[in-house]
Length: 614
Image (cartoon, one colour):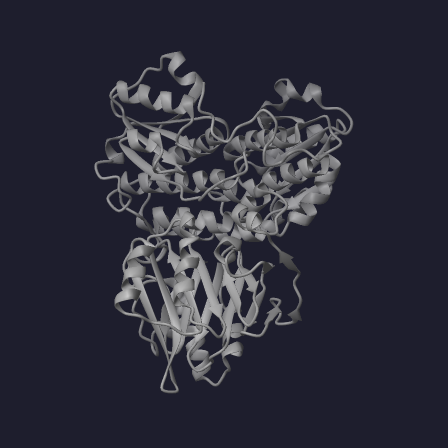
């Protein structure tokens, strides 16, 4: 997760910008850079220093080639568009404009195409396009503030942005749509940062920008605007050192914060697995999986526990539908004991957030002992599983503090879907046109998650009703059946309400006997090819008095408006990415139910974040 820090004031900023970047190292990055507006003999100029690798490399660069000023921005980059090079590192320049950016600009290709007759691009990044757009607007006569606002309205995607402009000294511009961004209030200085940690030594008074907000900072003040350019006031939060260290921001719980981080975390997962510039999945060599040939793999065996196992069950559908590759899923704690029949051309992939889960690690070692190729999908590349497997595949979700997994789950799904497309392309089951279409669907995931998060208020209202239940049922078909299992798991993990997930077609084979007046039944049913069958099951429980909550899209909501008393309408998304987007709704439903009941959301009873014993 990239990091941003910026300072506008009256004292030199370069050293403090680098210190701020050091506090953001935990987010993960592959390059770093700073840009400042320097004053020399009454003339200003925008200058920068960048370096690949660790921040210490940037620090050494600045020592050799000093730069300083009283207005500057800095960034740690996790590459999305373009390779890990100094040229692609932030800040990016275009004319008088310097910019740092987290997230993905989905429509950057068409924006770049519109500018290519008049502008020269030096990188493949989406970020550079934004800088050119602001500079072009200023050349057309707009002020810096007007150009910034005008440009924001043309961007589609999820992003946090910081901008400085030579010739508009004393002002810094910032915006947030998706990834978090905070403003620090100082004495004769003001600041921007990805989170409170970046600002912890600079300010104890923080403004957390809300969705769609943008702001203009000077040394003397901050003016925040909403998406319609109306001046607004946002609450100032006073933080302590411990609050900044915890980095919970203005969220009540880590779990809620991590739910809201998912536009950014899935973007960073995609960064590793797809080439967004060329709309292709990366090759095995580009992924660091040299020697892995899906043409020689006859079967995939996915092994995991808990939430990770449900991600694997979803991926089973993807591997078989997109790559025509048989796929087994095993709960790790059962895998060894059933003495599975293993063939030499099986690729065994262990899925674990921590990379230390005891049962999953034991299953991985069992596969290695039986001569299988092994891979791991993990969030911690220094973990035991990552060290022991033949292939280590990261999810890049960043630290997850809440015991109940949220952002790790959607990043696991995103990575597994990307791998399934890679396998399909490599095996010739997906042609170039289909690959392009699928990758384009992947690039929309962060934006669609961002749109789904806007349902938070409506979901919270439903959760208050759900909190009075003694038990609940989740139903889904096809790829949404594992999502029903995950929804039930989330609810019982943190609210302690008994919940079960079922394949909707299994309803008549027993579970329907448990439906009585008022029983909550959550039905996950986007308007795909299985929609009508699932709606038939919905009607079966509704006629028996169930309190139905339908999670669907606009088309499904219109069809079922008289069948379900409560409908959560998600954005219209592709069938292939729907499980990732719909996961957000079940997370929010469980979260708000637990909050209403007053449970310990981040540390539910009897549970641990990393299960390191069998």
